[in-house]
Length: 247
Image (cartoon, rainbow, N blue to C red; front, side):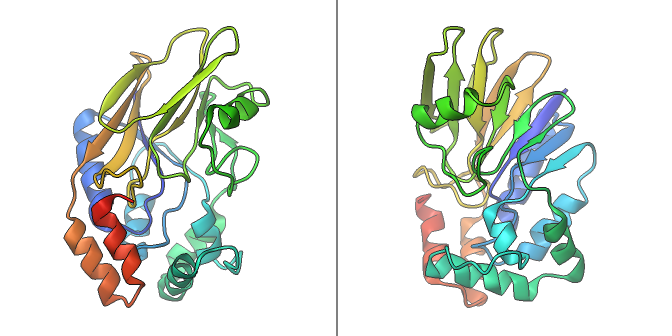
């Protein structure tokens, strides 16, 4: 069995379509998404319609942009561009998609095979996990072998060895890591819709449960069409410009 792991789609239809097509060829049969389906981008309904109709077993949790776009938060903690996009999204969502966002589960959530899912961290969906220190705080509190998170938009891999030592690094290109017995892991697949590691290609991961491996993957998509959709919607230009830089 293989699991598609995605996060931070941010209303980017072209990136999501490219990832789903690529993942289908890899044989993924179920999907996990760590939130932020919307925000920043101008195609929230297209993205939400697509993910709601995905076949197979699915685990979806809420992200902070989903929270604001659904009306559960006023977005006062966001920067001006992010808040503009979240409010614009709320005003343009279909009734079905607004209901979907409002019904998303707040993490952490544990899958039926024991994987812990969260958006920012298991402590707070708005918390950023960047460092080995952050990973240590999570792994000492939560017992799961594998914790999946999003929010930073940075493909990341942290491992704790049998002695409790933690190593971590950014994954800047397509890579495969073994999930070894006696070790524990904290993994971020990166962002589908708005990568921030200076690589503009959409990022995602696949867990191969039979081979006990995680594959970090990148796929090209039509950035220009996504930029044009943002500008046509009247959203801040910075949200379009940053896509080409992966920043």
